[in-house]
Length: 297
Ligand code: XIL
Image 1 (cartoon, rainbow, N blue to C red):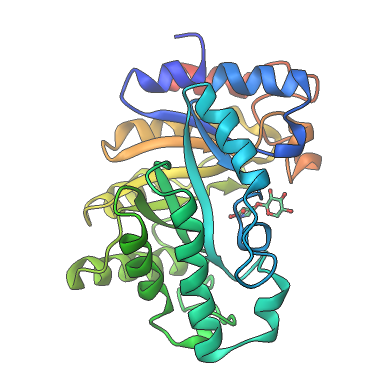
Image 2: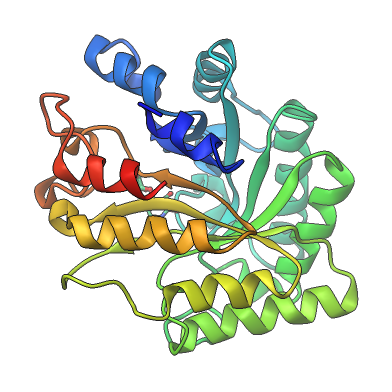
């Protein structure tokens, strides 16, 4: 196959990217994105601050722009994200306790109603753990430890057709506290029937030339709990070819690893642009890492 999406499809997987609505008018950007990928995540446009800027007043204009662009090209869309400590609407900062809990529930219901039946995945909850595996202290956590399962139960009722994911970073290394914390939560949810279908490993890799050697083990162990796994926001410092090949191979080796999404198109589009972490350079040329991924798919 000659594109990332087509190569991933050979094994029933997808290859995605994050898209910024503001860049869709850039023809180089849109040409690469339209050619290479078959799953799209909105980089910021479906986050709570974007979709519910005032209480009960939803705004889907930018999110829909990305959704329409993707689906007109036959691509699927991953929703990102419904409940997170970051990029919250400012009015969430003025409420707490049961009021904030209800606002979160209403937010999930409002956003999921708009996209009901249209998305492949939703990142229901994003980044709820500390590095040591304890729960991250946030205004949502302060509403009660059960806020995550409430979010997932609300989401299942709002749209039974979409796969519901927990998404986080630094959960790639199996022998790491945060990985264990997330693993234990998923195991607990599965044992008690809390609805959850998938775990997203953001896979923002930094230093070093090698992957966490147990990355594939982590993917397999999450999958053994009965959830799909996906690499949801991949970028790698200086786009190390060995790390890109290794993370791709790890996904391919785990049957329930359903796909890989890179967090942007060109280096110049990246939130980490100074680290040149993506598969296309600022001019839109394929980098060596592109070939290493394509060959590993
Ligand atoms: C980042 C976006 O790329 C930036 O444009 C924005 O300013 C901040 O958020 N984890 C996530 C993503 O789940 O939503 C973040 O995206 C990167 C880290």
